[in-house]
Image 1 (cartoon, rainbow, N blue to C red):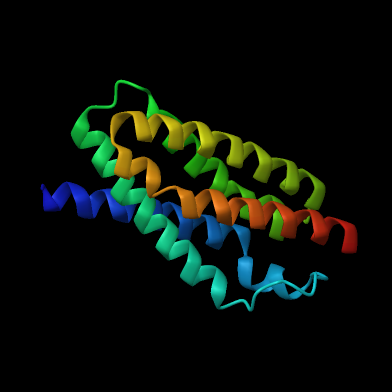
Image 2 (image 1 turned 120 degrees about the vertical axis):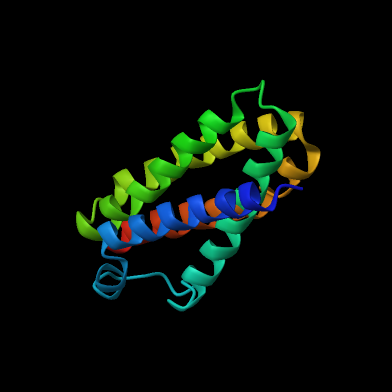
Length: 149
């Protein structure tokens, strides 16, 4: 195992996610919207995202080390960037319907990415299952926020 590459692979999604939350003004935006009753407390979101980013980083490292002839890392990068931009559309612009559609796009990209990860390294694919589950929950949450606002 190449520890330096692994650490860099984990830091990349965490930094991109952090930058997304900064441009999205998440803290202020979250407080100013009507939310469904099943919305988790605010503290849950950063915890879940850090775990998901670490899993993404480990997966991307495994794919990189095994040789990505599937184009998985390109899709990984695209979904990561779109994911970080989602916060801007949702929290800053309050484009809730667009944000819901964007979550579905991200979910589609992540499913394709997961399949490609799995083809390169089975563990890399399995590590993305929590991300898919979270995105499904995020889509349901986003749609409900749209209806409430």
